[in-house]
Length: 437
Ligand code: UGA
Image (cartoon, rainbow, N blue to C red; front, side, top):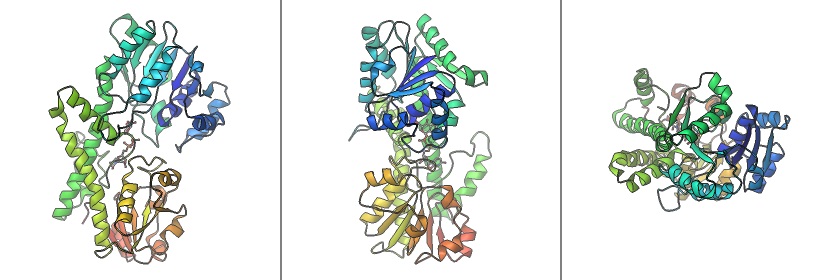
């Protein structure tokens, strides 16, 4: 099939490469010339494991190209819209300007029978509005909403082997045709048995925001339990293992720590609350306020714990933060709890050095006032406290004895509960985890 992918960020670039891998002829389009330049040269414009290899593989087939011109979408039969929907400045609601701009500029290039597929995370009701707009500008094209559930760090595998497909389509023959087109696009993963649910637009949009809200709730639940464990002298990691053995609960996404960040969970729960308010259903989601509050409280708590670890004052203390990305295997620092803690510590008088294997360039742009060092050994040298805030494998496998020889004082805060407290204490460290005695 001939496919266009509008928007080549974390979602679109991976989607375009994966669709070419599935055998389709794909053009990826983005207004960002630098990003498109990178992709045309076969370089991934961000860090995502497996993406450089996939780009090289599919570009060699000649099936994948990139362009800054929307004209190049003409001729494709299926057009995926993958642009970002960030949080509006000073508000909870999602900023839909990129979605609106993509649809407006794509409409002029659509032919009868073309299928436009929205993948961006949007407030419920957006697809119906866009479909009504398309009815005016490109009446013989049809809109489907096909939310994306990929995780950064696993984006390629999640796109090629998703847990499920959700198609939001209009009722009647046009909806059936749109679902058939998507079945053809995803023929290979469907043949492998990937479940597929066909719904109306509103349900498809809600599936995505409900899934992210549930995941955020699960993380904040375990972080609330960590607060209780801290107060009662219990261990939240054992608690999570024990409740997670109940299949109805499940152990995944029950890792207590410094909380969730990134370009999705935080802004999605806020946009969901804002949309519920517009629909007169705000009461249904008031619990998400608490989910957000528990999450933001983690960051303040980690600053306080660091102060305690440093003997009551941060003034003049050298602190090394291990990890800047919002999670490992990503260079994404959007709403990164690690960086937000680092910036707070610096504001409160500490001298903070941040190290990360991939995210330092992005971190520098966001927080130029912090000191960055890509080499863990020199970043650690002379520190009064180490804070492990993003669980990259190179940090979780650190040797407490070797690191102990480099620091000024053996204090470590394990913000992700990934180190063995006994091993670090045996090597003379003062170890503090989250919700661990
Ligand atoms: C999330 C969802 O997991 C994807 O399904 C969804 O497609 C994506 O958002 C999106 O909307 O585009 P992502 O933001 O890549 O994916 O990251 P997650 O793996 O969900 O992690 C989010 C945050 O939660 C990270 O900061 C992570 O460190 C934190 N987390 C995760 C915890 O603190 N504890 C856990 O147990 C799990």
